[in-house]
Length: 73
Length: 136
Image 1 (spheres, rainbow over the protein chains, first blue to last red):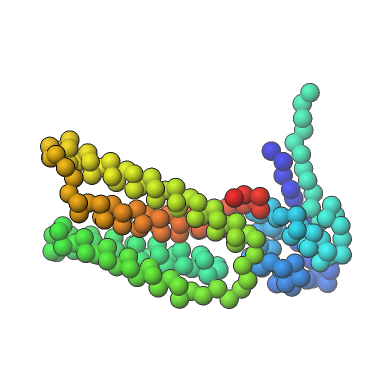
Image 2: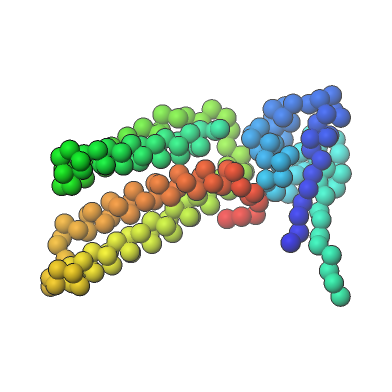
C-alpha cells in the first residue's frame, strides 16, 4: 500500500523554529492537523499539501514523499 | 482535545451516568422504575455548550463525515435488530399474534440513542487513527 511521508517537523525547525500554531495559520488548518501530519496520522489533500509547501517556500515534492511499494515482476 | 472530542466525551459521560443510575435504581426501586434513569441521556443535549473556537479544517470535515456515516449505519442496524427482537419476543416467546404499538417509539428512540453514542465513539476513534483526506 502506498504511503505519503513528510518532513514538516524538520522544516519547521529549519525555518526559525516555526511553531505548529504559526504553520497552521499559514496553511489554513488547525494545530491539531499539523500535529497529526507530523505524526503520520493524516494524509492531506492536494490543496493543503500545496499550502504547507508554500508556507515553507518549497515545492510539494520537497515536503511530502510518496513511497510506493516494490512491485515484483 | 478539540470541541468535537469534548462533546463526544460529554455524551458518553451522560450515557455512563444513565447506566450507573439504572443499575442503582434496579436495586432500589425495581426494573420498571429504573428505566427512567435513561432520561439522564437528555443531559447529552448540553453538549452544544462546548463551542468551537478554532476553525474547522479539512481533517475535521473528513472525520465528521465518516463519524456520521458510521453512526447512521450502526443506528440503522440497531433499529432493524430492535424491530426483529421485538417481533421475536412477541411471537416466539410470548406466542402473541401482534406487537404492541408502544414498542415502536421505544425501538425508534433506542435507534436514535445508538446514533449519538456511535457518533461519539467514532469521533474519538477517528481522531486517534490515521485518516486520509480522500476518505468519505
